[in-house]
Length: 282
Image (cartoon, rainbow, N blue to C red; front, side, top):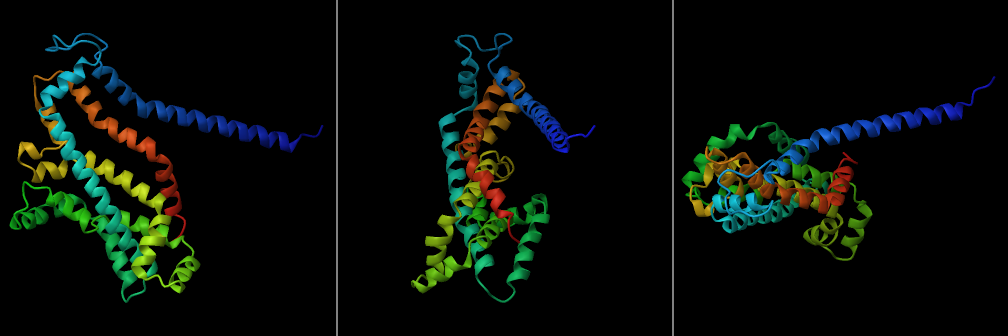
């Protein structure tokens, strides 16, 4: 009796598909469980929060957490200012550097690009002391300049790499036609290359948002004044308080992490497309 090879292959493909989806579901449950626990704890579904008398409803912990974190509005404004400014600086400077490495020809270009990528192998803990000495000598301690200056100077080699890879995927004919129309080097970058690089811009914007919004390292080192504090600094101080209940701490953590989740889901299309396309050409 002859077997149908097509049916056997189809059954095998379905089995692999079911196994793949099952594995993805298991991974999703594992990753989402801590977040669900954090939200559940923040709502204090198990009972009243210590010291939360007078708070009404399941959102009472959030109100009390906002009160204990200090000037919550100023914290949000400070963090938003650093995040938005860093996003703009990173996109402009890293895209310019990536455009130069991808489209301009100059002596030592490839060696310089390798050196830029080599800096990715240096952990930030190695350079933190020299950077602090430099910024202290410039009088920048307790200001936002040490946090914003690296973004202004294109200090993220990974983003430069992303933009370079994306610009390499853009056909050269588009650039040549723009030059024939009288467009200069910067005009081609601003009018042609950058608008076409929207997926890469979206990916860099999301990466920068997540890094700066959740950053504790640099604000902890350079910011001393309470009026310049960020949400992560306030959350760290909140966590060090031995009198703070776990449910209040989780409520504060949820308020800090919610914008990250919202931004990612709002721009995930550009993020996934940007990561996919930037790996298409070397």
